[in-house]
Length: 243
Ligand code: NDP
View 1 (cartoon, protein in one colour):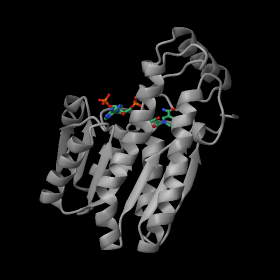
View 2 (cartoon, helix red, strand yellow; view 1 turned 135 degrees about the vertical axis):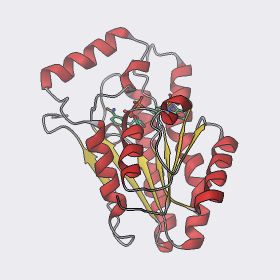
View 3 (cartoon, helix red, strand yellow; view 1 turned 45 degrees about the horizontal axis):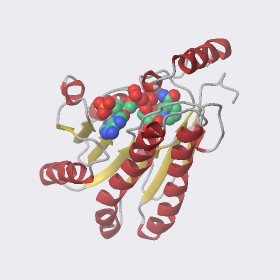
View 4 (cartoon, protein in one colour; view 1 turned 90 degrees about the vertical axis):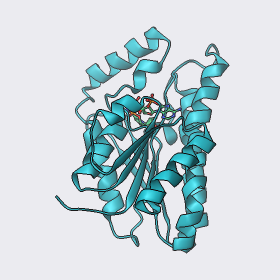
């Protein structure tokens, strides 16, 4: 096992991409700070050199406290992966506006919270990486995705802008835009008809072969490129996904 010493912070590490990221980085011995609301799922991984904290990314104070505590132990965060997110699909004409707010607060404000917590130290050190998980729905429209698209397009705009702010300081600000991958993400949508339609589409297209682990390995590869190499935006989908 390689032993890496730089602290990596992963939000949304209790399932899906985040959980696979935690496992992949732990294989190389990186110290980790894992954040999500279901802390027991992260603790159950029993990863070495790992702090797990129950943090809602909307709570900036708690988010920052967790990062500072991990930094006391492992040194400044070298990588933040803003992965936590929710997808509540709905037709804009009928969807409850509380669902829009939940998505914008978690998917956009949560990412902004994370960026502000680590970016000034990175700027000062002239090193570090922030990777924001957007979506192919951050550059493309999909039916029933209006508010989700608003949040993920938001992440792209945010990432591109902050990249401009931090690139003079040698800090990388990247985004990854996955297509459909089977995780828990769809399960929070409250409209069963939309869930059924999405699953039917996946079966018809056959676009279910790409895994959360494939996405995690791609993110890890991107981070492990030299600091002077910025793989700015990666769209990663199942080969059979045509939209
Ligand atoms: P999952 O639902 O499996 O994982 C989402 C993670 O985010 C969970 O660990 C969840 O933890 C966490 N999370 C959600 N809300 C909060 C919150 N308020 N505070 C802290 N953590 C939170 O989905 P994925 O792994 O698929 O999603 C990860 C990211 O990838 C999301 O940003 C999603 O939008 C994006 N994405 C996913 C795609 C897919 O097809 N799967 C495609 C494109 C992008 P907990 O509930 O314990 O807090």
